[in-house]
Image (tube, rainbow, N blue to C red; front, side, top):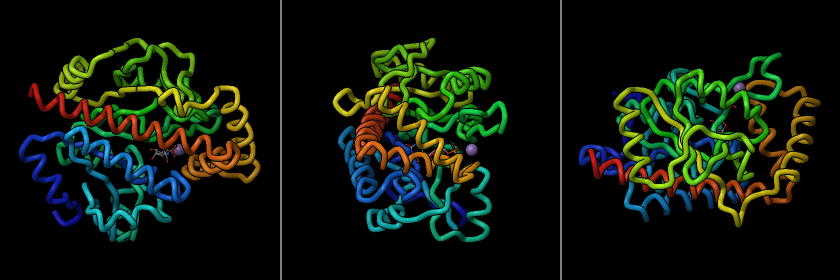
Length: 301
Ligand code: PSU
Ligand code: MN
């Protein structure tokens, strides 16, 4: 189909049942990380996936075509300004031939599932926003995690969300949430949210077995692993920055899909780059675990 293009490298890897790890493009665009940290994040994620013996598959909409896997010469295109593409925006980005649509978690999961990729890595998933009981803002990432048979590896959910409600919603939707080498739900740039998870697994082979069982059953699964200690932020410092960022977003009257990019940028500025450094470290760490998991899943299937 012309609306969807798989890169030759990813296509070949899928045919040979080799390990493939999907990546979203919002995190690498101006919506996710400031320049030049975004280019560094892209480089580090790709390198670590390849080093583990898996093939990276970046998803994006380029010139109106949904892409799974892009060539190195196209990397520059996803590092600039973008229009955010959640799953429901995919048909519009294609039909209106958007120049660069940056895929979120939900759009990436949908594209990955469509081509048969079983593992996806991101930074932190979207979730239930604070105050959702009033304005109803719940990320489309959550139902997409439930619907698509793909395993998502993340450092938990972004810490400016309502994390208890995010976990509740994942339970309601029937998404298994597994802590890898952690007992608590990680809070993105902070190692722990203090919220206990039901399941913890400490070895990749068992994780791969669980993942295969879930994908066979149908539906996705969320694997969480905390940001590496050396780059983690202190919870109090982060919470103060979050409060200020949320207040400024509210004062500017920002709602809906605009909230996440604006809050991420405000936190980045407020923490003098510490949050960005942590973001890079966790993205790379998630990509590493995702690649190890994808490799392990191919060894037993
Ligand atoms: N986490 C990050 N950076 C990001 C996002 C998450 O560290 O840019 C993006 C992801 O693409 C995620 C999206 O899918 O934010 C969620 O947006 P919303 O809350 O509007 O659903
Ligand atoms: Mn939203």
